[in-house]
Image 1 (cartoon, helix red, strand yellow):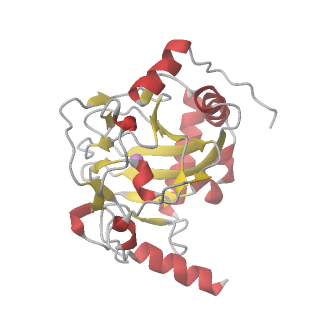
Image 2 (cartoon, helix red, strand yellow):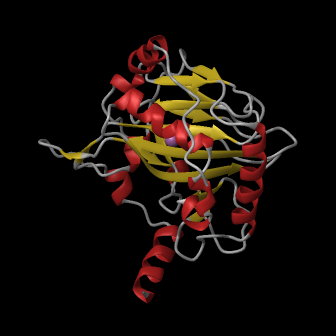
Length: 265
Ligand code: NI
């Protein structure tokens, strides 16, 4: 594949909006053709249960028992199971956007895929992404949320609380207070100022690692597919340690599978 040039160049207004509000909406970072093949790849790796045994495919919002229909299927590192996802215009644009928003040292990091099945895909509760991460580190990063079809209020587009990236990491708990569930929910939030961000196919939203965000359930008749790509500068060690006790309390089947799989190697 020949090297592609980025097609998206942020304006100063867009860069300022990201730093002031903690999020950004872009109308187009890809092409209809690219989205069509990505949808095929996406559906294939979910159907194949790619990563299940290693703990990389699981139910984000449920207890994840074997054979139980997942309410919110997630794959960590989908590009490990479908390396072609690392190619393409959306990825070239993502890398370019990262340097524009976070500086020359920013690179594209890990990806994950969250699939909201038609009709019953569960809501993704309010959370800050950093609440999942290592409390000993300081981050300068964002998540680029890239749906593989239009994202609407009905199928679960993202919502943000503007300027919440200025908050410290708030306390979180496992969804339903069930330590078997991987997904986190912020303990308390004022979402009266929250902004919904519906976007066309090929668009994306970008949010800072502390921006509070939410996605509704999928009440539409078609699946909602989203690929999330993390970008950042290298994380640094914190001078003042923190404790994210909500992660220490988890006992998820996902972790058990990851541990069993690592022991086999
Ligand atoms: Ni998130």
